[in-house]
Amino acid sequence: MDSQSAAPVERALAEIKAVVGVKGWIEEKAALEPYLVESRGLYRGATRAVVLPAETAEVAAVVHICAAHHLPIIPQGGNTGLVGGGVPPEDGRNIVLALSRMNRVRQIDALNFTVTAEAGCILADLQKAAEEKDRLFPLSRGAEGSCQIGGNLATNAGGIAVLRYGNARDLCLGLEVVLATGEIWDGLRGLRKDNTGYDLKQLFIGGEGTLGIITAATLKLFPKPRATETAFLGLGRVEDAMALFAEARAATADQLTAFELIPRAGVDLALAHVPGTIDPLASPYPWYVLLEVSSSEKGSGLLALLERLLEASLAKGLLADAVIAQSLAQRRDLWFVREAIVEAQKYSGSIKHDVAVPVSRVAEFITRACRLVEERLPGIRPIAFGHVGDGNIHLNLTEPQGYDRAFYLSRWQEFNDIVHSLVSDLDGSISAEHGVGRLKREEITRYKSPVEIELMRRVKRALDPQGIMNPGKVVAL
Ligand code: FAD
Ligand code: ZN
Image 1 (cartoon, rainbow, N blue to C red):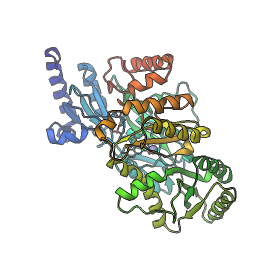
Image 2 (image 1 turned 30 degrees about the vertical axis):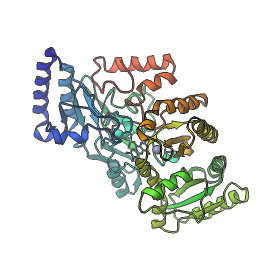
Image 3 (image 1 turned 120 degrees about the vertical axis):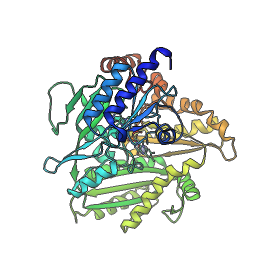
Image 4 (image 1 turned 90 degrees about the vertical axis):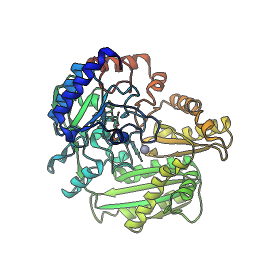
């Protein structure tokens, strides 16, 4: 901190403390700790205080003070983000603004199939609130017990049901946002049709807190599924998985809810490291698919439809073996394998990629990417898994057995270059669902045109000319 800015910062902090009161203020070192580190430990920052406003007017007052004193604000939700977006910079001259006290569901309009909730509402709590009104809020993922609606929207989160219901952007009808000036924009409309000019909410969705603070949102709800069938399939080739995907979509239409790819190497890691993982099929197969179909109508013949699909795929040679869950417990076991793959990778050095290519090029991408990295480092263990029904592959490269872990991880950029260049050749994206944050801020400049990056900068400069909203993330001023 330089001497000129010291006094205003202290003044700003005192003013903010007066706005939020003791319940909304953390400055004790140990209590700050959980707000300073990225969920995988990739980044560690520093801050003067964590501020927890209780309502939108308090957020606006805090931002107003920060704007007057040029004090940077780092919005934070559940801090489950994977790109360092919610972590404060190391210099500590900032406040972290955490939304967790703003966790009310303001209204469920069952007839309009919408819910309006505050940004700090935990995703699992919102799912529960919708269910109590016989509705479905479909956003769903491993971190749903701690990530928050504001964070989900700010990162345009995806997850396991995007195939049918879309990502956070597709689910949002309206937003309430505190702008970098401290003004409140009330755009909480629950309309499916509204062509009255620029769709401003889209700037803040996926904006990762760099343009404003989302304080509440109106989101779409859906009829609650009354029948769900889950199958775990064993296959020989990733090409077969994608051919099967096309068959499944055509045969089940809108009822296909999830289509997750899992490699044998991932199941092996899960079996080795995560207690409770069950090998789902009698024999091992190089690839697996976790497929789910659901219907809002009970007795809709969903099981028969799934069985017909699997029999036809077996006859075509796309499929080697399959199990259909016979109970809720078995369904949970099958999903547990998928979640355990993520957990298991914490036990080894893993260079990660969250990429998307057109669905028609997923098989080509996986085959070529695996070949390229194996040529560069024999023995490397690629684990390509994820939401391939959306063209989204989590390609994690596990270190070769016995390889020096620190040295392996020091080669992170080298492997990013290989994978991201291929993604670019295939007209894909180097960040499918986790965002840009700090991790990919430089990387996107290599894969987006100068015109696109400049447009992003113009938007940033227009909405946050002082650069106080989450500086150093997504795009440089
Ligand atoms: P945070 O991590 O706190 O913040 C993320 C970003 O949003 C930061 O830039 C922050 O500044 C900004 N932000 C937070 N709240 C606000 C707000 N109210 N207004 C403005 N900006 C804000 N992601 C997926 O997309 N799909 C998955 O399947 C998935 N699975 C995951 C599984 C695990 C085990 C974990 C740990 C993470 C996973 N993620 C996944 C990533 C993460 O859960 C999402 O990015 C999530 O949306 C982040 O929400 P959060 O509340 O934790 O936000
Ligand atoms: Zn994912």
